Length: 81
Length: 254
Image 1: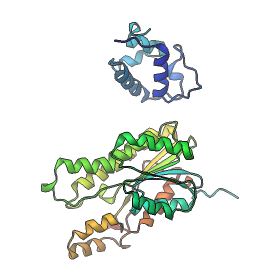
Image 2: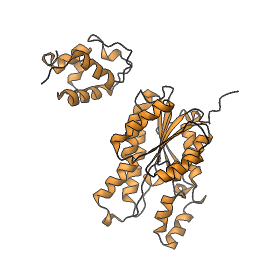
Image 3: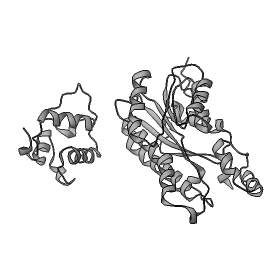
Image 4: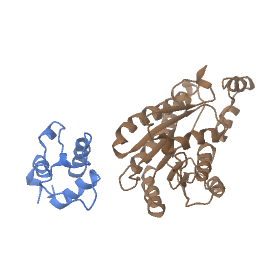
């Protein structure tokens, strides 16, 4: 699998959650702190990851997610540049 | 002077099935109430005729078969670029067929659901994106039918598709609350349009008489539905979402 660029992943995440372009998201951003993040966002992110990165994540695994970095760890840090 | 909550001033409203019937009348009525209309329909000639009847404002029209789902985002994107973000959406496009169950094949359901349900829900999905929808709020109205909650002989595909519109709109209303988008459906009984004339034309004189007698206030006119629709698009209905408004001349009261 081609390595995922961190910046591209964050951009995909912003588009998926419809986060304004001028809002800064980093690996340390806590997803739950985002105003765009709600109860359905988990499903939206899981679907985006499946579609874009062909990686399956169960919604129960998502309970461990806090920051963007922890989401990347769940996908597998080895997949990122 | 206080703002008139019932007008549609400066609202940009997308209407499917806008060339004739209920959708066409909605375009004319909403333009009179101050809205800019984005008309979408398949028939260019009729669409242009309706477009010419609109009170002059910043209107647009698109000749498009709305079951070509991959073309829909371009319509919304172009509309937002040209006249601004969307405050209202009315899905009025619909098809109807009178067929007994023994003649209904899967393709009939597919056609009925693709126009009556899926294209409308797909447009709602696109319009509700943050980049397209007015952040002050918006209102989506799906033209269902009283047949969405009642049955009628020979109308299984139509009734089931219109029922899907009612229940889907309720679920959508809950999901889009966070974006300040209200979602409702309108359930008309028989309204005098080209489509209903065609369906009624296939019935015996006796059956037509029977249908007329089922409407205590007589058959509806397209503007009877357009007025109800305008109310649901206006700020006067700001506390109404997830509802199915019955506008049927008393049909379901019997």
